[in-house]
Length: 353
Ligand code: F6P
Image (cartoon, rainbow, N blue to C red):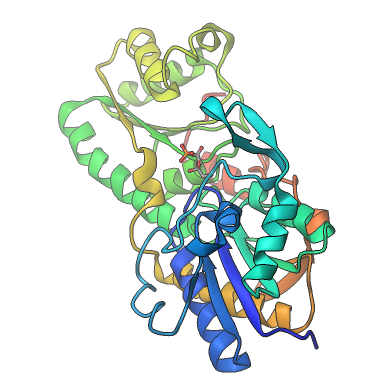
């Protein structure tokens, strides 16, 4: 058993629905099960640069936050105490990790739950190697962490994107248009593939499958030939563009580039919807609330068991702990030959290949 009296909780990287559910669960379990004090660290590890900004998380403080999107602690996508950007135009880079560790000590924090994606887990691991007692909780709407079967936030994002595709369907059919729906996912196509299947998309373009504009236009034409005069194309932000479009990538977002190219190539009226950050917002789905709650409690139990340098994860039906050193940097891509893609192909969804 570890000798813990007080824990800190920090959320880092892009927010995801379910963060507050983890904060609530971890706080409640720490207080009710272990009688620990809990401190909320604002804006990821950046919060430990100014320890006076941290605040106590009580049962009252976390009451009512379960259904709320975002994070009551705040977050930052750029914070890294090992490469802290400061000075004029943030042009000076300093290692302030010692200061961060010392400030955690000043606050009386014995161990920290770091809730974040791959980047935050990497920072947490480096702090762990310097002696900080850290356990990780994985999060991202992109679902691209290989350590866990699923991350919370992904299911809610799927609901949001599927709902958007459903709405786009009716207007697409009425106007006989090609509708390009651009979705997030960073370098992986999970959101595009799963929301595309759930929303009945006709073409899905994603980083794991190379496509050509010619094939996309042929697939749209194939639908026209059988009287289907509208097409929904879901495109993941990380797609690898064919050479003819690559040059313009910097000039225009990927959805616009593709939409304009399809309008010319398929001679169709095209409209483009870039869903953007609405995919990260909203109230977490029941699945995400439950997974986040399980992760929060498991992280507290992991601290009690002295499992520092570890991260909680979902494997099958079980919550397990994995060594962060073995999982950072290992992203989980869609298998282009996998069952999910084969299922999509079997029902006629095109991938532009
Ligand atoms: O990782 C989550 C994510 O929403 C990605 O899907 C997207 O590429 C990125 O974050 C956007 O980051 P930001 O909010 O910093 O623009």
